Length: 520
Image (cartoon, rainbow, N blue to C red; front, side, top):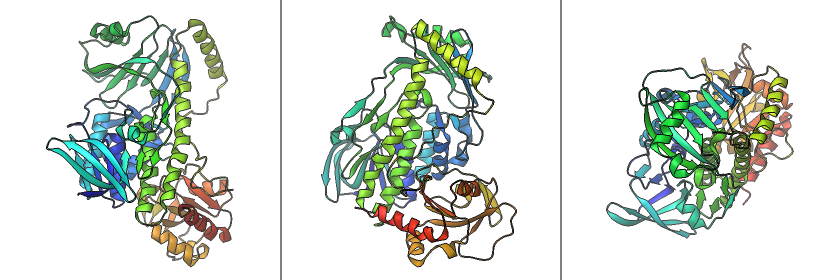
């Protein structure tokens, strides 16, 4: 019986990302996908700066140029054309990447598949379908049906990335909490015949007569969406005649654009009640589905993948107990609930069809627009961890760690690129003076990066075991100063485990990490 460390059910973007992150850590991965070829039309059209950072960690950042563009700006207007909200997306957000990027999903998936194929230990089976799972103490037997019949494979872990109608979730017997936010929207993916500037690049028209959306779907691609309003039949709504009539509201006709595809989808806001049972786990849409209005679906799935990858890696290497995996749902579900609530709040504004209620909404938003200062707004959904693996009693614990540019040994760039990813202990003093032998041995076993950070332009400190990073953007020293800390320990998913207020507290900080991952 063929055995793999991890078998992933579903090879969409989250399954692809998880495959890469695990394989980069040396695990063998088998991905099972029911469809013979990738879905050739976009579903998601934007992701955030945290997702960009995960993509960089997966080794594809330098390949994305042909399939991504800056989202630029988001504007909400009412049915009379008055601006209710305007958000300009920053080019370099706190993660070191734009706060929002528009992309062409088939192109992104192809790049992720290309990256996965480069890594040793990766097997992709398509078209194959998982038909049964039998759990044992040391692994899972997976029944798979494919073109040549049925077979059984063994995996130490199985992860369901198989979408909203997940077979794996059904096997777990997990219930789903449904918040009941359901509206029908007609999605039209379009390729304009000629290059054309759209101002704003991303638009929400909050018109009670017909809520509608016009957004970038990556270079050369656009998406228009129209909500079905009360009294309108679905059959009438999704007819070809209706599609072109609605696109005509934006001067899109068969003469100037090609309609790639159209279809009606129903918004959902739900989360699985159980993300893990023994050696079987869920990620991405199998674990949560949210309305599209904040562009957080795929971004949330990428967060799942990175959170799960580093924890599975530690368990696989014998550095952590399996109980560490219980923190996966604890951490990710809380963040997902935040993203779902914000998506519902945004959708509630957009989807209003009662004219009186819409007028009240417009008045409130226009008043807020007049009060707002000139300070730039972002769409960042960075959210601290509320539980899980973090240093208790520490103000910074669980906060997202920002990223800036550093210089190490004459090489300058973003911290992740120059220093590397994984656990990072960043120190304002010589780490040799801060770490005892036990702490150093444990960090070495983790493969942690231990770095001394100094101001840009400062004289290079004397020789030491740890590399010196010059803080070109004053991101890291400012972060330490904000928390009155001499060192910060960062997790592989870019969240702060904790800080140390003085040199004597650094070994205790490292020891607390060891205790928490060995708490089973």
